[in-house]
Length: 250
Image (cartoon, rainbow, N blue to C red; front, side, top):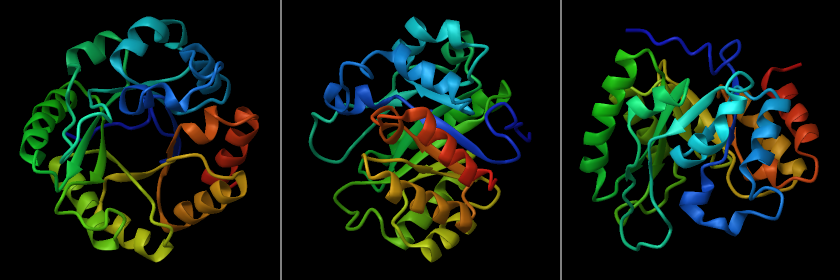
């Protein structure tokens, strides 16, 4: 079954506003403004993002007034930064709940190379099958991590992560960019017909952000899943406009 991505893309390109960091990092990323989910959802709506990425609790309490303004990608698993050892991100929300909340897609992280990889594969299988049976696209966060992964930004391990996303049925694969455009071209080829979006990561200068966005679009990425570099910015809507101009090559 071919899944329609039109609800969360435009002309095969996209920009997602990520706001799932509170579970992963705690409130250390937030200030008095962006600690309020409404502030970030306002940015997503006014900036006409293709989707906003939320965990279940934020979606339950804040998303309803924005349902017709910006599509929702509901993250179905997560972890904290407190536990040590090989990472595992387990399911915290169902596909059924995502549908009830009005999600247009679901997301799930797999830590490629973690000793807990089989558990995440097993959960992803069930999520992917149920989501696709209900017509929902599936976004995989494909992050190489764990004791056996010596360089999580290496060309070959990122290409492997991209290929795993394709092989397991993801429609969109979220990856980190290692700063080497030729590496990214091969990584995107490895993803086949699955779309690749690049993670925004920690805060960088606007100049560096725009430069990297030009490179990833030139390499063939479909867009960005970006959070801190937008809602930590002093001018989030102006920065959004600049990124969209690059992504849609205006």
